[in-house]
Image (tube, rainbow, N blue to C red; front, side, top):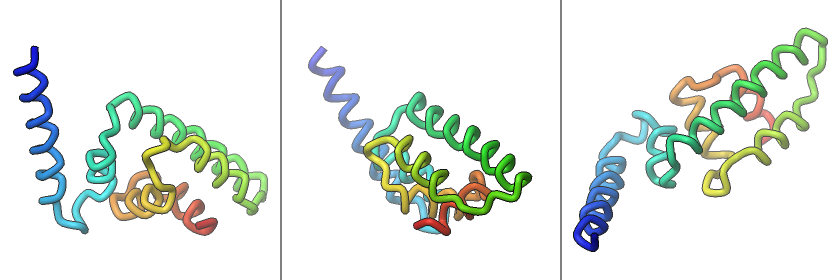
Amino acid sequence: MNELIKRIEKLEYHQRLMAEMIPDNGFPFYRLIIRNGLSKKEVEELLVICDRLSMKLKKQKAEGFVYNTPLFKEFEEGLHAMLDVHEVVNSCLVQNIYPVLMKQLQKSL
């Protein structure tokens, strides 16, 4: 069992090194996920939040609502504790993940 734990720790270390090899302009969101050690479930929870907020933003725009601070606060509160809202928004913009939502959230940074 102890040998298995050592192998897992070695794999995690190698994974972090490989993430650092990705160019800064490459996949910053994925790098952020790896660097912070988030699980697949934690990332999926973040994407569910983004889906929900994207739909909410679309509805608000259709109704002419332009004040997005509540939307930003909701996003920030839903983030995993290991993530920084500035890093998430900026990395998603670079990687083109939820671009409309992230552009709106960026206005509140």
